[in-house]
Image (cartoon, rainbow over all chains, first blue to last red; front, side):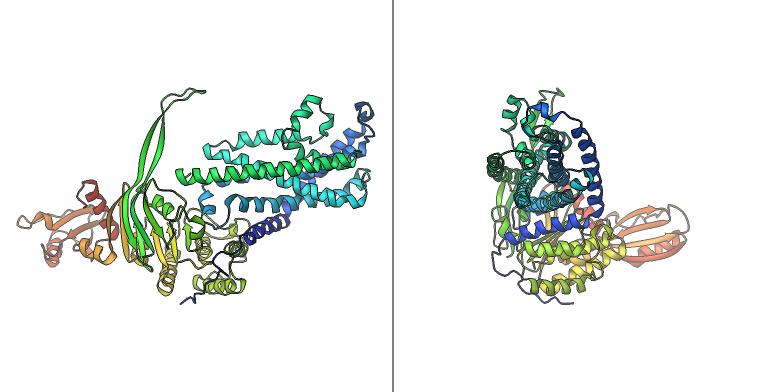
Length: 277
Length: 331
């Protein structure tokens, strides 16, 4: 059979953004199709919220010198940070697997940027899952854990924006860190370290303001509070300035990480093209 | 000239551990030349078999030609581009199929990977649909593109992989062991499709394979490399003429490990004898010894159940050339 050949590309240099948008959509679609993953993640989310809501109700929060903090705030804080942590699995692992399986070369034969393409897919996947968990929390937390939403409804759009930025930053950190896999099978160790640093320095269970002052200073020198604390802080009795500061920190870290990605991507491609890894 | 390669060399740095100290391990640095001063050119529409034993430098050369590896020295142009410099521009003109790797998204339906690739290459969606339909018809995959990649058999997946590489209508298709692990029927089917595609569309095929049937059925030219050096670059026909002077007579006998006694008057260089189980293999040069003499002599020596006469398989020829190459006599 003869194939009628037509030049399919619209022009010699079609816009690359279409490929990135398609990768993002593919990530979103996969999250929506992966029902088993969504159900299991939701189960873990509900169990964690149940355990910690019980703990928070028995904690003498008023003695912790955090003005106006109530158990509801803490439950919502955890509901927000867990949206990010449970919604963003495998950013590090995915990048490391691509390198370990020698699939970098496959991505290098495409016309678009290897890192941005992979990240768009990861962003699509994680942002969708995080936002789904957030939507679920809006219904579940007041109903099951008797914790009414501590913010006005119109502020939800800002929370959504912060969640999106958090997912973007977390995947960027994971992907850049995953590049160490090029030097050997270090994914398990580095992945473990990254997740623990996110837990501890990001403020997964407790806001960073609970930490001793010198640890707080150290934490804010890292991008991790911009991943978790910046999202959870929306649910605490803090001023709008504090929330704005968290948002600006997110923007700052996004800029820093995108610059780091640009440099790391160039270095990785040069290394792969030289060594054939 | 769609591909031109001049004195292409690729040397890798190697590290040999000298001590096993945990904190301060010491290494001795060395070099390994995977491809050594290779030059050849390929015309548009050629179907080239790039063959050699494991570690010969086939994949390294393919990687350099597809722009994912920078050579240590030498020059190459592929579709008018220097691959390792114009990698992204070249991507629109080449397709790659790795038999042992997949470019499809494993847990998604095949069509989703195709749609994604169509966006990656910026294809006009109407033209893309038409081309996809034609490719589905050619490769007979219409019924499986809505299935998840994870549910496909290896043969079905490989057909889908090839279609994925052809969606953007590349001028050159690099195939790295496309039939590895496939059953005989699927292999034959895939070879027919590839040949059909190359002949009817003028797609240049560069194929590496350890299966000589792939080479015989698809290619019209053979480049043989070993230890990073080119041993042979000639048409398949020329190769056959040069190395297929000999005929192979296979005799199936009643006795195990049959013996064949060569008459003293016959020249030794005209025949090579080998027996295996109940079979006797005689590689005969008909210009030196008549085939009829060899057969009648065999019939007088042993109880023959079956006789077949044919060309020496390409595999044997390649083995022979490797052997010559090892002894430095190939050139």
